[in-house]
Length: 340
Ligand code: TXA
Ligand code: MG
Image 1: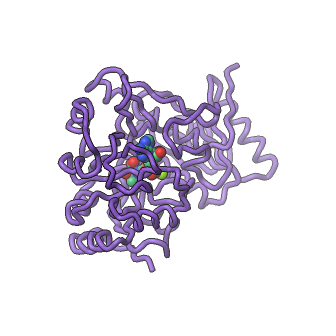
Image 2: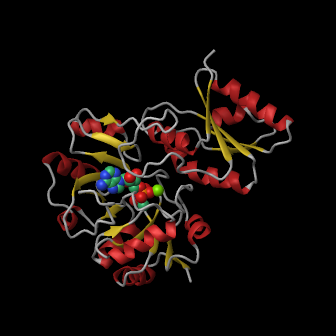
C-alpha cells in the first residue's frame, strides 16, 4: 500500500522513521522527486532497483544533509571538490568522490566512487536531518520513463510499490542535478543538469562536457546513461539544424495527413509558428529556467493527450540549454537535421 501525504512536519517525521526501518519514501528535491532509502541498508537499496525496474549497473546518488556528512560515505574530498560543495550546496550539483568501503556496493554498482549531493529543498533537507542517515535516491520514476516533477507523477509510476510519497508540490528546477567527475583535470560533466557549466567555470575554471550523445552513438562515461531515457511513451522526433522549424512544420502536416495525432513540445516562439498546424501544443515558456521546469511535465501531458508522435526542436548549449538539449536527445526516438 502506498500513501500519498502532504509534506507536513509530522509526515516528514513519519517518513524519516520509514527510511530508518528500511522502507522506501518518495520525496521532493529542487530538481525532481527522488525515491529514497537508507543508503547504508543494502536490502532497502535493493528494493529501489526492484521497484524502478532499474538495472543494477546504474549507480545511485547519495543525498546528504550537509557537507559534514560527506565523511560518512566518502574517504576524502579534494580542495577542488570542497570548493565546489561550498559554492553550490545545497543545490543541484552531484560530485563523484572516492567511496568508503562500508557503503553497500549495490549503491554504486560496484564502483569505487560514490555520487553525493545536498539537495536544496526544505522537505528533502528536513527528511535527511530527521532520518539522520545518508539517503540513496534516484529519480522516482519507472526506469527509462520521464522523471517526476510532481507527487502525482510519482503516484502514476510507482503506486503500490513504495511506502510513502511526500507531496511537496512541483519541483523548481525540473531537470536533474549536474553530475561532475572531479577526479580528472579538467573536471568533467558526466550529466548536464541544474548547475550550468558556466556557473561551475566561474568557480573552478575550465570544465569539459563528456561526449555522450546517444544518437551519435558515442560511448558513455557515466554508467547507466542508457540510450532511451527520460522518455515519454509516444514516439518523439527531435528537429535540429538551421531549418529545423520548417522541417518540423512539414512533418506535422505530413503526419496529420496520415491521420496521426501529433503533439508538439516547444518554446513559445516556435509554438506560435505552429498555432494553425492542428498539432496539440505544449508551450514550454520563453526562458530556459521555465523551459527546464516544464519539460518533463510537458512530455507527460502530451502522453496523456494520446498523441501518436511528439515533435520538438533542439536547443543550443548555453546555460540550462545544455541540460534541456541532453534530455530531449535522450527522449527522442529519431533526430532529423535540416540545414539547407
Ligand atoms: O537531481 C537529481 O540528481 C535526482 C534527485 C532525486 O536528486 N536524482 C537522479 O538520480 O537523477 P538518477 O539515479 O536518476 O541519476 C543518477 C545519475 C546516473 O546518471 C548515474 O549514472 C550517475 O548519476 N552516477 C551515480 N553514481 C555514479 C558514479 N559513482 N560515477 C559516475 N556516475 C554516477
Ligand atoms: Mg533518473
